Length: 295
Image 1 (cartoon, rainbow, N blue to C red):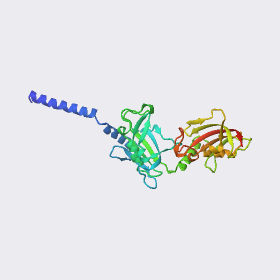
Image 2: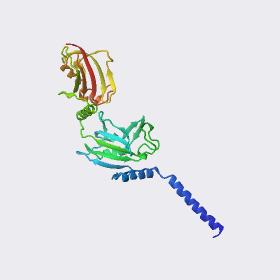
Image 3: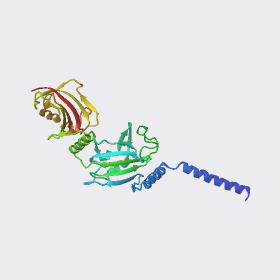
Image 4: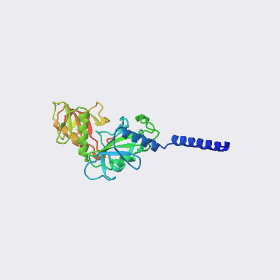
């Protein structure tokens, strides 16, 4: 073999090595994600379906009833986790999310808007009461930047548990939200026929409140999330009971001096429109002290 042939062979081998090295160095993130997800599924003996877009999903419970369309409003939940099981983000079970199915892929996290198409597509496969698990590869999730405030690393694949509640009427969801809140806080409340729940912390012995009464009260109003939206700030405020929200009508069962906590379903509060920072369909949580009454 002459020196020119040897040189040519060496050049060819060198080019092959360089090409292989570059190919490995620039392996597409889609391939890296897919290999990691497949390894996770194999390690945990899981069987998921793979969508053409590259995400994996498993329908755990399909649910019942008619299929939802994009224009249908649904109450739904989701929990984001790392593949190691660390919870990163989840919807509340005391202020349950509701939106049109077609918008369930939209999220705002750390003031950044995201569109997670796999979530909407998997929710669309479910009916009432259905739930599923999906794995979003990083390029369909938070990408190379991650989200530091949520401890989501660069190019991290995300497992998401999603589902649609069996309850699809607002009053049913409100009932569930109140039940979840009471359970989570180890509270026992009496349920009035009006559907308002209440806890009396001090029985009053003064004048009886009437539906036509003008009340002087100390009060604090919160959402079930704990966010305060109104308060008398320690200075008694007067209201005509007939002009307050419907849920306050229950106060006519009590006397001056009563201290009471009320959990008011949204249709007896500010309904679908909400009010002054109170979201639509929100259950309200009031602490009230009846200071005086004018009949």
